[in-house]
Length: 443
Image (tube, rainbow, N blue to C red):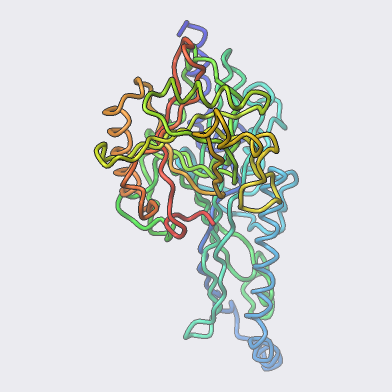
């Protein structure tokens, strides 16, 4: 890396370290989009004794306050969804306390204006943002929590609202324009009343966000905890850990091998520590048994002429080499588009006509339903020991983070290759493990 590149990295690091203000870089300040939050609220006692008339009004209203606040929480969750979709343009200030606090792994902010300035910078809506960043966007995966209950003391209690999200942003100030990716949760604490004071009759039917705390999947997950209970799974870490995680994504990747074909699309759900979680759409493909991988490539390549197959090549190899089961190679052909459901689409007519006939008798159609796949990358040659070791490492990481594979997945290894045969450069290979329904927090 030359001196100019190092200077640019130092600039980004300095900006990332500023504790608050227009130029601070934070996921909390960056994102105003984040995971599910559980909010617990407390109604402050009146600052003065209520008159008999005020008390009568309050007593009549308390029976409906829970319903009113439940309706407000539902509306607030819809507001958060719209803010994420629009990348907080606009940010709906009326739902935030004036002294709302924002904390994420890299910085802390206080006040609506500070938060808005950070989001605008990340989105390139400020002069500094136009220089530093490009292509910022966030995918919202879920908004949960916000249950409303009446406590034993008659006070209204609101559980945290939690959002799950994935944020991407390009650091265009660097010549190679690296993309940084953060996934995680945002926990919103909500209270009845907003900025309306302490009078009971003033808080009824009103809520506001008083605090937001963001956590990253790559650094904040506590080992050996349930992935289904976010408030228990995430923990704070030193800011130096977050800064190193950010800077590690800014390094040049070097020369990569050419891809064999356009890639099967997916939604990135999590950038974890040592792995990713992806949601793949349902797809239909062609498959063949093989003993040598080059023979499998040759057979599927000849069959798929004119069908525009997709990358990657997906191989399934049984762990017991002596059980007589064939290795299987699959090439995706068509995938379900958004709104078309979870099942695989119909195969191309030409594939239906040819599969299993004549010289193509070893080739069959294969359908995959929508699924959540855990992925670990490796760069060494995809030989048996390397692939199986990567699979074992991924299983340990999933266990650490409370994620559960499908019941039968330990009997085999699935790995994927993206590169054209005999291509030069840094190669891309992965092991895949499908997760069980209910074995992960993404529904």
